[in-house]
Image (cartoon, rainbow, N blue to C red):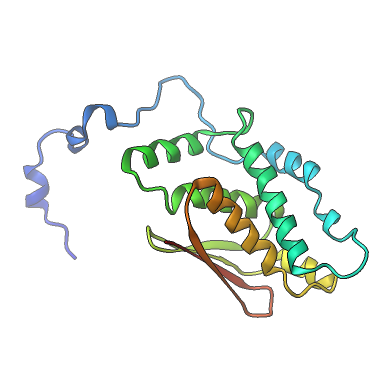
Length: 195
């Protein structure tokens, strides 16, 4: 599609002035904003929820136990990520836009999912392949968590990730259907559908 410069020439002044006065998100001059996840958050969450605790149990780890561990992990992460110490400008802006637009999915939900991935698997290769108001797809290409679980003889690792997603849905106050597609080579895709 070609850009029509004649149409652009008709726009006088700054097009952003069309936004309602109290809806603009201004940056305060001189204020230092942090948009990156602090490493200290990773250390704090891993201290409160050591992943090795899943494997310290006697006997086989059931799907129910993995789901409980996933829920516990996400509760710790949400508590810390929303604390005054670790809450960042990104979180504030996502929440402000959600309040202004009334649209909470996928961005409010996605923030916690991404923080969960970065906290447990900071070196993994993953990406969001679709993010719309109807679907969020997160693909992990070489899941370190899946490999860790497989090394311990646990083949139903998706129970952990599904519980993480359900805990986030509860936190953001949404009903979300979650599916997990695994290929057996460490690659999986989590798909979230709001109801």
